[in-house]
Length: 460
Image 1 (cartoon, rainbow, N blue to C red):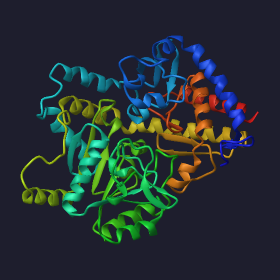
Image 2: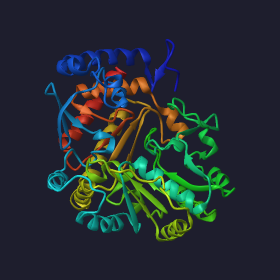
Image 3: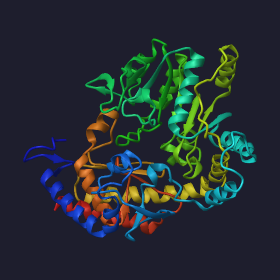
Image 4: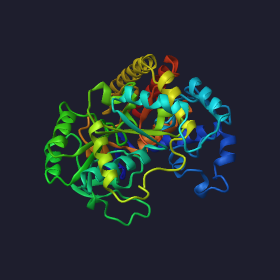
């Protein structure tokens, strides 16, 4: 991809001047349709640093954040009355739709019984069994975010192996776990740029190799100083990269051969099916983490461990000094989480709902591919179950470095705003789209039509 500077610069095969022109025109349309939002949040909300409750609300490519009035199913309505078919779905947090009826009912029921009391409830008695049956591991703990769950799981891995390091893949996504914020810079490990207040060289405790590179992985594990490999089954946050045939099997073989634990983080790949990528493809992790949508939108996460690891962890606990483990937060494992998670697992994350999601995701992917082919764009589409992404570069991509190079930030921003103006919302940080049980065929067809219209404008 050429540089985005200079008279002949392009992104994704589109000239920068064309991108700038379309983005400016779409920004005007966006503003005109949202006078109330602009008046309320256009110059920031008083009392919040940066003008928003969470800093990344300013990272949407729209001229200002959309002020939401309500969200239901797969539709968001803003304060100006604009309705958006929502394919972002809270960047997976609402993957099963906004306020699924069984979850909303469970929240109302539990709200009359207390929200947190540091003790289990009857829902918890059912939940442990549900998690074991659904995801295959026998021992579980509840946290509030996948970041927390990953941190705690990595602590356990280091404790039982007595090894200091972890290994991640270039381009990985594991929430805000500090030691995963590394990348390969010209082939050499380095802290990711832009980390706020990070004074440590994270590469001292973290090894990093490219996804789909088994020889590099095996070499990195050979010293047997890595406690745990933490990975998504599919790279999902840097332009989607699927595992090549045999890679995940080779990963499991290499970790076992070197006494290294394997943590599978399904926070995004739960789009694959009711048991995630792990159950669909028979992965055998020692540790498993799932956050975001597991409680239907209520902040919650789970982490599970195998029988063998549980026995090793129990032995470690018997031998360690008494005192606070450094794992756990006061509001984790509260009865509101139990109630919402039970409802989500029993009544929302069902085979029937996933079949609907899979069918429409296939329709969406095919429609986007047809539009790309029609307009002869050098782009491609990837899909993992209900998760679809268009990538403004040729593909498929093999690893995180290729995924990083495939980003076309200005082009993607123009497309995002243009989609919003056509009643479509997708994830702001990449070109990800999710299908929920509430998503309709009409919404999918609307997205396909809007995408084709924008592609026509870009290539006119």
